[in-house]
Structures are given as structure tokens and as C-alpha cells.
Image (cartoon, rainbow, N blue to C red; front, side):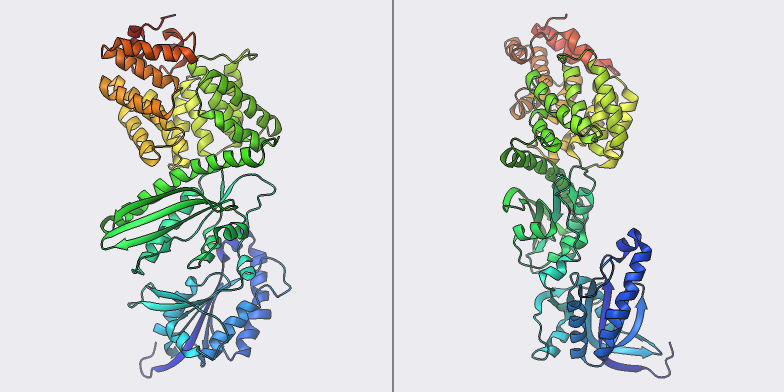
Length: 588
């Protein structure tokens, strides 16, 4: 730039950008470029010209326009956004975000520089799709001169701007904003869907806006790894940022069944994040929790929030889906409803309820024979029968059925953490294919480290085939993430098993008691209660629990349990089997 003469003037700067441009280009580059060209020719260029604007720069999907009049700049922006959707053009539709600032601008040939330009460019991303974001100086300049309602957006910190900027926002009519949202189609598929809304900053510190947005973005990314429900994209859910909303209306507009919302509050160096999961149709709260942390370890706190929220949302949605199916579709013969009904039995541990679960899931498989989730659910129930020594009536080769379901599930469920975890766990515990099973569980953790069931599977895999320390790490993580989940008895019994192997019988007994409080019919928990009491010489208690086990699992013997359990490292079952013998369980 030449420094001989600096041409500096006050100007209004309009910065515009196309919403979702990168995604559109990735989907159909030719159609996107054609739509953008048509929008510029038919909408953008004529509108700018009619409001006395001068196009300074085109940057792919972005534009920079200069106005001598701030009123012209705002009226131009309103005209551009109000014309959205009124042009007869093939898809994809072009939707803009616009930012406007008034400030000192330096002219150099055909280009412009300066604080006025930089602020306008930073304001543009703060506008919602189809909306406009202006600086306070612009708002002050158009009072009584522009017929539009701008809402106070408060003070914000902008990247590389050394002072807070007070902003005002114009929001498009709801019908216009919704055009930038692609609702999830739930009519064709019964898979549940979720929107994660921007968390509300209810503290006076505007810097927490960035932290709240970062938490939500991390949660959306982590939840997107689950295959059991769909998560709507950030660009769609963030159009509601800063608005007073009705959750039921949001759910309807976005086409989702569940909504996750939250808030952030700062007091001194302390931070509190509150999150709640809501059933969109009726606005009922399904779950709520708060998390406390410090500004001193803000990134660790952000990771912890993401991990905890994500781990609990998936099972809560599953519970809600089961209740919804029973409430609204009790007589349904849809495969998805058979699957949901099966889940009522998946966490139960009696031969009769296991059989009922298999009957239901096989109905789902008959309707959708290539559904990996249904196949894996059947695999999990068959593993339970095999490891606990329950024979399936009318099935000559139960193992062969299980093997067939595993191979089909893995073919049709590649990349699904739950499918890989269940199949891997079954290969270890039931079919004794230890190396292949361990690798599948390792893959499941890589696919989705925040899936609570997968975390438990990793604990079990290490308990039988790997490091006891690693097993404890996974079991404790599962307990920390969701101490009251439907599968809490799994990780508690796993921890009790580790303590039995290590000879810590009192600790094993305490953990087994907690497990029994979570599920009073879990066979392996009874093994720990019986064996730990026997090892501690408390034979009366040991025999009472043995009688309890035999009441719902008659005919169980030491030999049957040994045959049903993994044996890659045999000494990891011996303390339990020895305790069962001491209590009086028959050998054969």
C-alpha cells in the first residue's frame, strides 16, 4: 500500500456470506455455483445498485459492499433478506447472513481496509441465517429512519477487535429462517432425532458466550457419533441463539423429537453449566443436571461436560423411546417398536425375560433382516443365555445362530460402536474368540468413546483378556458418567470381579451389594456375593445368596459356569469358582 497519500473516509460496510456454502459445494458443486451466480445476477447485484452500494470485493461465497449512507446500507440488507425465497430458481436455495458496521475506512485503489471493515466482517457470522447483525453505532444512526425491528444482542467480544462491540439483530420471519433448516424426515424412518440448542449465557460476562458455544459444538460433534438417533446440524439449531423460545415450536420447526438445551453462569472464577433434555412434542423434561468447574481449567471442564452430557443423553433417549412406544403404539407391529419392546428385557437377567426379549427381537429381524442394531441386540441376548448356561428351547445349535447374527451385524453395521461392542463382547464371553473379540471392542471405543455400553464392554474385555488396571479404568469411567444407568450393575459387578481376583474380598462384597441394589436378578452379581462371603468365612450369608441364585437360575453348577465364562486367563475366574464351591454349589 502506498503511504504518500492516505484516503480515509467514514463509510457503512456490508459484509455478506452464504449459509452452508461448504456443505452445499460438497453435495453438488455444479448446482451450487449455478445457484450462486443466478442469485448474484437476479438478487444481489441489482439490490445493491438500487441502494447506491458499491461492490468492493467478492470472496467465493462472501461479498463486501461500501455505502456512503448507513441508511442505504441497512435498507439494502433488509431488501436482500426479504427477497429470500421469492426468486424462482432451482435448488439449492441461497440464504445469506449479513453484518453491517459504520466506521473509518482506508481506500487503496479498488480495495478498502480498516477497523470499519474488520468489525463488519466479524459481525456477519453472528447473524442467524437470513438475518442481519449491526453494530450499535449503526443502530443509533438509523433510529426513526428505517422501518425494521432490531433486537438488542448485548455486548460481544470479536476476534482481533480490542474492545467489546454492542450488537443489534434483525431476525427474519420464522418461515424465512426455517428455509435454511433442513428438517429431519421422521415419517419415513422411526429413528429418533435430536437438536442441541445454543446454551444461554445468563452471566454478565460476554466472554462466556464463546465458551457456551464451544461446549454445544463439542456436544453436537460427540452425539453425532451415535447411530441410534439423528442429530441436527449446528447451523440449523443455532438460528435460535439469543431468542426466547417455545421448545415445542422449535421441535416442530426442526422436525426433531428431542431437544437438549442449557445455560452457563459465571460467578468469580466459578462456572456452572446446566443442561436438560426435553421431549419436544409435549415439552416434558426427561433429564436435567448441572456441572460446576473453574475458569482456571476451562478446557478440562469443557471436555468433562461434553463427556458427561453425551454419555447420559443416549440412554435417556432410549428410555424415552421405550415409554413413547408403550404409550402411543402399544399394538404396533413395526420392527422399530418390536426392538424398543425388546429393550425392556435386555437389562433383565432371568431366563424367562431373556426368552421374551429374543422372541420380540426376532420379530423385528424378520421384518428387517439386515438391520445391524436388531441383529446385535439378538446377539447380546444370546450371549447372556450362553454365558449363564440357559438353553434356548427349540434351537439345536444356539452358538451357530449367534455366529450367524454376528457376521450379518458386522457386515451391515460397519462403524457402529454399539454393534462392534456387543459382537466383540460376545466373541470374548460366549464364543471364546478372544483376539477377534478384543479387537472389535477396541474398534468400538475408537468409533465412540462416549457410548456408555461400549465403555462397559471395554472393561469386560480387559477383565478377561487384558489389563486389570485398564478394566478398572473403564468400569470407573462408566460409573462416573452415569451412576444410575440401566446397565450400572454391569460395571459394578465388573469392579467386584477385579477385587475378587486381587483378593480384596471386603471391597468386592461392597461393590456387589451396590450392583444388587441396581439389579436384583443379575447372576454374576450373585456369584460375587456368594464367593466374597464364603472367602470371608461368612457361610450363612453365602448360602442365603446361593439359594437366591438357584431360585431364578435352577440347576447352576460350577462346571456350567466355568464352561460359560471366558478362559483366556483362567486364574481370573478361579477365586469366584472356588468361593462358590465353599458355599456349597455343586461341581457338576
